[in-house]
Image (cartoon, rainbow, N blue to C red; front, side, top):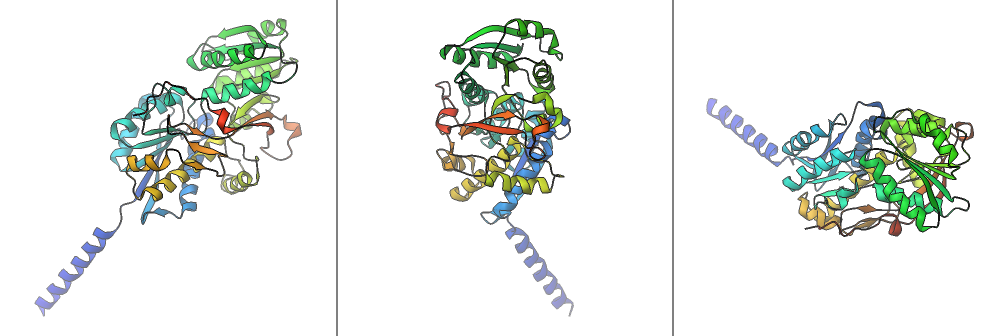
Length: 395
């Protein structure tokens, strides 16, 4: 009897061991984002994590017979924390790092991804070197970069009658001066004139001090290049000054307009996506809003959903999560989804191309419904929206 009991226990233990050994390891996606700060959390943050999980759920929750797990790490919008977080995620089994807002954070994560031969996708960095001098086989730049957004806006405004005199206000940072250097030659190429360029200290939070200079220049267009919360101040100070000029900026986020509202009224700029662009975008945005107290998704959050979906599709095509095999499936891949129209993973530099949109921000009194801030003025085709550069030497 004892021998029979022991035999049964051993058989049960063996079956349990086999079952455990056969359980497939999960595929892991780790979202690295600022999950606390009001500004950056609103741009992507926890909503970006949710959008990534929506993509996984819509894909069926598994791929290659393996469950998909989405983890999240808080970078606190600090580039110094990014290398350790990326290393931690890969050590824990992450097959893909997602979201990665903020250019310095993206640059730091790209270096770790390259060293580890693992994939990462940024959906919110503006830094063009990520697909130029600092491009990497293991890093994709989704949604937009500074040259695409700035040149699309400049070309549209320069083509409009009467926009002959331009004033550019740029903060004394790489972002501010880089935006100005991209816009100025397009203005002059159209026969228009930058009548004044004003550089303000990086610490500037009150732009009213430059208004007299701006007014005296009698501009038709005023470009304000300042990022983060300072961008809110710059936009508000200029739009509320009563100038008879179109105001533009390099980076326009729906969440920033939600927060500042009429401070952005009238601004014209290029955006990568808008929740009310078409029926597909609106249907997905309705689903997102239902779980976020009616709040509409940002372009970064929609890009998180799109990028996750396209990566999972590539994994399925490749039959593996091996980064090099997935890259082979992604490079040259063309697609249309809720985020990207005429989308393509450009193999030469790992920029993800798609149509961009020129929008004007409505005043709050003219909103047809909550969060419907944009009038779409024009579409910039993917083929011309993302200029190429010889600086990327992709191995």
